[in-house]
Image (cartoon, rainbow, N blue to C red; front, top):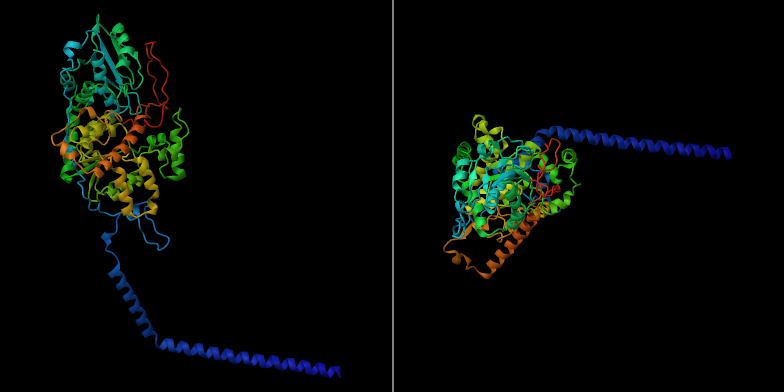
Length: 594
């Protein structure tokens, strides 16, 4: 019985499996028949499907061509800018920080100051000023050795005339530094017009080309060093006794050795030296004027940019310029050449506005101030760290990019090209004659030109407000271009070279020659402004003054070329035992010794 039941169970299972396989075959045949039918339909209608698809694609391309912006509406330089220059909102991925090619429509003249007509340079001596013929003592000679680059030397030359006047001494034509980083063997007469220098100042100070002989032998001067910020009392107490005893004194490393705060007649003497007596030689003047003429033929107005971005200088600052680990290694290796530098704090330096702006940042600053891509720029610079890659964003923003090497031939520059001082003199002339001058740093050339441009008509001179711009450059990823440009213009108020941006006595005198700026008739009309306007001006002047005060505390520190370098040359020691030989400790701020 059990066997019979078992056989029936097995037969029942076999029948169920047979029926299941039969059903599966039916479904499979049905699917195959459906696929075959569908393939036949598609094959018969392939031409219609292809025509429909092609029509859709043509329509799509037509819509794109109609609604897309024209090619010239998008900046051609955007591919060259770093990725952080293009910012997209996470919500809708729409680009918001898109730099325009145009500078925009502003309600002011970019190329001149409306207030300049109310002020002019004035440096004539008062009736109380004693002339050289009645005050110069015989057998009392002052020599100075000017240190640094061309413009740092210029400060020493100007101040040496005033020092000789204070000491009632005859000034011997200054010696120029030939040992420093710049390694320029040029003498005074190879850069400056000696005869004009002597004759122009003949009523103020007696000047000779060399020390006279004593008993047929050269006169050996007593070498001395002075602290910085030395005022009249300092010279009379420290130098005069030695000068009376030894008859000839040589002051070494004579830069910024004279106080900013002197009586008005002495300040005006500074201006007569700097702006009238101290001129370049005829060959330098001729070549410089030729460069200016060629720039004027290219455009009605042009900007001159003094760009300091050499590897050595960047390494000395200790700042971070966005080049990542590669930059840190390269600049760190250069920085180790100086033996006395402390470890740097790049973030702190940037926060305090002590880092020079990058070429891209200068380009964005100028565009935000209203200068479009059609503006011509003359760039005065040395070797740029990173080369063309670093300059690419600036050149993309301002494709009309020029330098003395691009507008003059190699043959024309040959008499100057081997001498850094003479090449710097050519740049000085072009920058002085430019319609707008801007610098990415606050070095000696920027200061000297700022003062000169104030004296000769307050031509627009842009000082980057680096302390506030630093924060803005970091935050630009979170704002539109219009917001960015508006804040740049607000921060730069008080830093554009307008009259009385910096209060008298603030900052370095060569940058702010307040004693030599006089008010013209009609100034009272200008002063009658609304109360709100006056508050605005006072606030901005105060802001600029604070920045100038910060600079003033560091402007006398030794520059980066004076710090002990690998190939430095020893100088003879001071020979006056009464003068301290304590070495001044270098600091980072005086690094722009151009």
